[in-house]
Amino acid sequence: MNLPSLSDIQSAHERIKPYIHQTPVLTSQQLNKLFSCELFFKCENFQKVGAFKFRGATNAVLSLSDHYKKKGVVTHSSGNHAAALSLAASMNNVKAYIVMPESAPTVKKNAVAGYGAEITFCKPTLQAREETTKIIMERTGAVLIHPYDNFNVICGQGTAALELLKEASDLEMIVAPIGGGGLMSGTSTTTKGINDKIIVIGAEPLNANDAFISFTTGILTPSVNPLTIADGLLTSLSELTFSIIRKNVDQIFTAKEESIIECMRLIWERMKIIVEPSSATTLAIIKENPDFFKGRRIGIIVSGGNVDFRKLPF
Amino acid sequence: MNLPSLSDIQSAHERIKPYIHQTPVLTSQQLNKLFSCELFFKCENFQKVGAFKFRGATNAVLSLSDHYKKKGVVTHSSGNHAAALSLAASMNNVKAYIVMPESAPTVKKNAVAGYGAEITFCKPTLQAREETTKIIMERTGAVLIHPYDNFNVICGQGTAALELLKEASDLEMIVAPIGGGGLMSGTSTTTKGINDKIIVIGAEPLNANDAFISFTTGILTPSVNPLTIADGLLTSLSELTFSIIRKNVDQIFTAKEESIIECMRLIWERMKIIVEPSSATTLAIIKENPDFFKGRRIGIIVSGGNVDFRKLPF
Image (tube, rainbow over all chains, first blue to last red; front, side, top):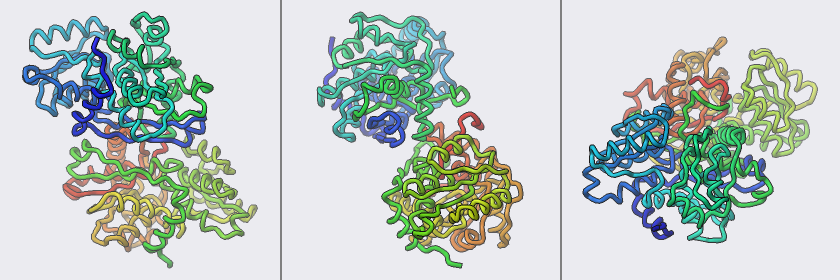
């Protein structure tokens, strides 16, 4: 299996730089005090489409062959990758076909439609998504850009950590959420490539803990009907992301739903920034494991900020 | 009447610099496109206590005589000034007494209590606030730091525009909300002092339009029982702030409640930052007067981000 290297990620960064936002790294004295550590939040909620996913999608679109630039791209996604691929495609005059679960938040559906992609809705199961996607590929000849099981997507996602490590020096740890593992694969490859002494930690909802179980047992074990408020983390690792995570990640912690909600609220209230529940999973594992993180300089990848305001958990 | 000058504001800036956050200036391509102008948001929602009020309060506390540093400070406020004065006082080992209306948002009450101030609740009328404040002053010997009818407070508030004008060059207009007029007094003094060609615009809720009426008629006319979602803008101009605003402000526009709510939501959704309704009043007047603002480079003072999440208007 061809695993990405730091230099693949550095090349991706050069490629996507003109298209992405270099997002800010924010700190909060109040949160540092509350959690007895120094936190550096890489704010991908300020990224285009409101999530880190725009990095991977842009790298994938820019890496297309001329053939597929004409035929278009297709994907299935719970939302952020769909919006990201739609915008990345539209910015490069490539046609995008998006398969979305009917249950996706309205704000995410609207975003995708706004970028001019062709949407097909399906039942919210992996099987329905994959079947619908296959039908569209056969009809259009478009190429699948998987949300995370894709070399170029992973390289793009790794560029957020690249910018974070440049801006916040002497980090001792990096924490990122794990859903399908694309962000964590990119983040861990970047981090270990730059300095293998930096401890790389994955954050996962307890209610969607396939990565924790797979990582602990050494056997890839997908989630069955996971149910968590962190709607960006419902997906399970692929062979590719599992291989990268086994190699580069030091530890995975899980967080309870109530910790995720409490930490989401804390970030909103204290930092005045909007983060989605998936992003708060990182702070939630720090809250649940105070001794492990105490006194450390910790980089956190804030994955996204797309929230349906009518369905706030607080 | 002694009106503040640019150099008073510059001195205030030197004085408070070690205590305040130099807040970021954010832009949004989506909002620029939507409103056909270039917007530069000075994010005082990221200021300490979540509002620009910390600037004025800090300047007032640092300007106290030794006598009053020992006796303490007292104020009445709907919330942000209360939190600001409490924190500014506590950072300088000065005792703070705060009179708050019972109706203030819980998040603001908690903030004030958290900074160690002594709170006295009163009915939500100006008369009740002033009487309660007077009783506390007589009992303690503390000095009143009025939320806006105070020279040093106004000088502190003017420092946000100072930073904005330094960071965003060639602005053609500056827009700030008007409640009691402290922020607008400081903002307009700074702006006209630096470049009197920059057009200074006040933004006020239609439902609390005392500044608009006073400015238009030339007669100071306080609001009577104003009712607006912009809870930071319920107060009316004082003689001092009216004098400064008449001298320095070019125009005042009012915004309807539905525009304020819509623009608050737009800022949350597109910029992923939390702003309170008062802050959205600025964007709301731009929305309601597209011809006036079209094509301009406009600085906006985002006044604060303290919101009770259980009472969102959307």
